[in-house]
Image 1 (cartoon, one colour):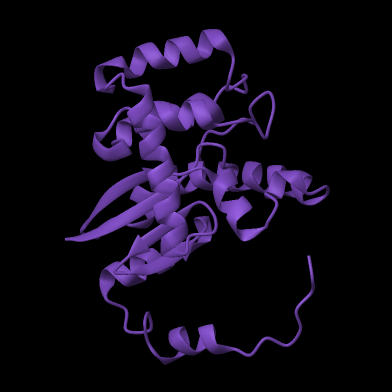
Image 2 (image 1 turned 90 degrees about the horizontal axis):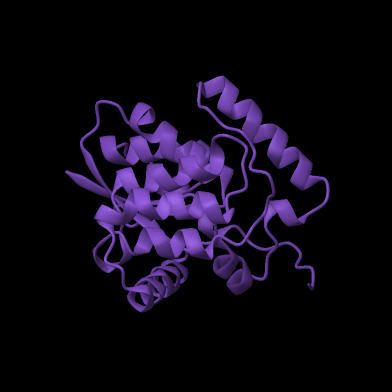
Length: 213
C-alpha cells in the first residue's frame, strides 16, 4: 500500500476541494494518506510569492473558479465571511489533534468544513469555541507542541520542495493542485510515464529569461 502525504492549509479552497474529491478520484486504488498541515504563507514567503487571494484580478477569478468547481463536482462550498484570514489558530488546533502534528481525516474534514461551509466567519470566537469543543476528544491540549509541530511540518515541506497547497507526495514525487489528482492516481497505479523520459526532461528545460523581483 502506497502512502500519500497531503500537504494542506485550511485557508486554501483548492485544498478543501482536493480533500473532498480525493476519495472519489482515487476510488479502487490502494493507499494510505498522511495529512500534514502547513502554513501556506510560510511557503509563499520562502519562495518570494504572493497568494492568489493577494493579487487583484486573480483574487476574483480564484473565488469564481472554486465556486464553479464545487458546483461541477457536487461539493458544498460557500465562501467564508472574509478571505484571506490568518489560519494559524486552525492549523495549530489540527496539529494538536494528532501525533507529531498529523491529524486524521475526520479532524481535517471538521476544520475544512468549519471554514468552507455555511459562509460564516472562520475566526468568529463563538464558532472557534464550538470547533475546539468538537475536536476536544482528539486533542493533546499542548499548545507549545502544536506550534512546534506546525513549524516542523512547514519547514519539512519547504525542504522537500513544496511551494503550494494542496500538494501530494507519492513515491518521492510532488504533485501540486486539485487538478493533479489524476496524476496521483497514475503514480498509485504504476503508470510508467511518471518518472519516465518526459517527466525527467521537463525539469531541464533551459531558462529563456529571468525577471528581477
